[in-house]
Length: 69
Image (cartoon, rainbow, N blue to C red; front, side, top):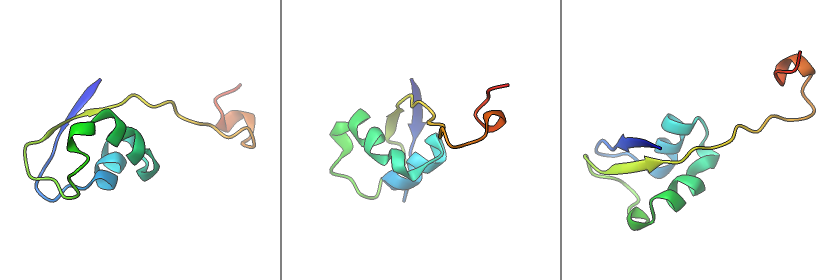
């Protein structure tokens, strides 16, 4: 599990985008760090745990874009 140290002004969706690549992972980030759910805008220095997420690949993509050769 990875850690992220906030900078002043960080928000959940921005942290999810920076660390996981998508804002849609905000819910997973919040579930991993329940004691900080009350925060909307973070102060500097809060250590958050970054969850491991599985990358979803659409079956509609051609094989070479899904990593199938």
